[in-house]
Length: 629
Ligand SMILES: O=C(O)c1ccc(O)c(O)c1
Ligand SMILES: [Mg+2]
Image 1 (cartoon, rainbow, N blue to C red):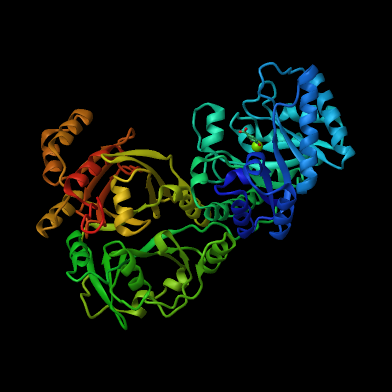
Image 2: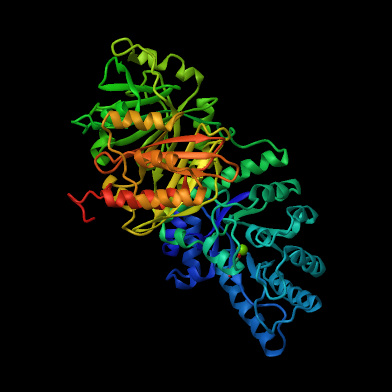
């Protein structure tokens, strides 16, 4: 299958789009008519440019409202087609995509449509060209690829074929198995798009919400697997209409497109029982979190960890790096080494998480998969943490994701850190481990990071939700592995006044905004934080009154929650969730302490507006010293 992308999928001028497409490693592109019409490149310029960039022009598209016309209108439609044939020959493509008519007065009679395509096909063949018919999901009469296949079969010309578009078929729930009835030689082009599962008008859904395969919720891998089973070998071409992709950087979007196609072909090969292309997604668990604290003169971070219930357990043998630990193997590294990656990160962003370590079954395989997906892999970072080579993937905000397997982890802390020098007694505080890591990402990079995490690791993307901040709406999505040992949230806001946007400005870009640690006793944790003098985010009385009304809680319990500023949630199955938020260090980074009871698996979304409003009142992340708030 040839990796291709339609120019409509990217922002920029036609030249910029094609350059980004070539640089990302695509072999081919579809030329979308509006991009060509708006360009000042002639058809011959375009052919030379694409040849220069090593790109094949697989199709000129779309040719609209062609079939089912009569009289003068029909003659005009054929005239239009002749003009496009001239253009196609000059620009160097032999295929014209004809999408099904949306005209009110076009006939839907199959006999007439077959006759139209037979005539068009003959005219195309005379010039060595081909045409392919695509069913738009909102086509006036033809909106199903099975109907297109039927018509193409009846036309019975080698110059007339089918365009399949995963969006049009999957948005209308047409069974994937219907592909297995198709003759692969009749399929001239396969267009790929995913989309979030929504209940909305098909045209609006298609024109604004399509996304790259594996960024949405349609069964795109099953779709491609079916094509593999029937032996389709033609172009697999991304055709993504998405408002955000048009505003994003075309190079980033093109790289995402390639990543998505490679991962998709690999997933599909596995489903089809063909040899996989990549090592599998790694099962991953969060092993440690590393903070850059080069500017932490007052030790605010260490003080906070201490108050939460972690203990300093080791000092690095050579460097200004500390190891902190909670009960349940929670490792937190505080790095104050200025001549290091953490040092550079801290100069740029201030205090914050500069790296995370995840445990994977095989670090070489994980790195290989990342590399094949076009990720930036730092191969042998014998850096601050370890003298042993540990591969790392560059992640959000320039931070690193270390890939650690059992071999890399074996004796890592003992070897690199002096564990006796500090406090050898076991940590007994109620902190059990990491719960989740919350990242803030630029709004137009939201889907890029979603794709990054879900193509590298074995993570499930939960339903995307909207969070209400007093400064605007925040898009939020959780990614989690099967046992909850790696949980991440992505949050992105369009407006400038949300906590998320303020973080992004203060931090100079995307990054991790808070770390949630899990306790087995929220009241014990709350008591300890209070005794240690750690200020927590203050929650108003109205919240507790509402909580009591909603859940029918008893007075004493609610009073206890309120006394410690604990937020509470309960799910339909009786699972319970407790949350406490710290104030933010440097008004940027904060901690959350959570307790999950009875298999509660959410993130307290119902409490988020209350939390974000409290943070706004407290002035967290509104660092107005040097930037307008
Ligand atoms: O939205 C459209 O008009 C449109 C045009 C061409 C396509 O291939 C398509 O899938 C949609
Ligand atoms: Mg299409």
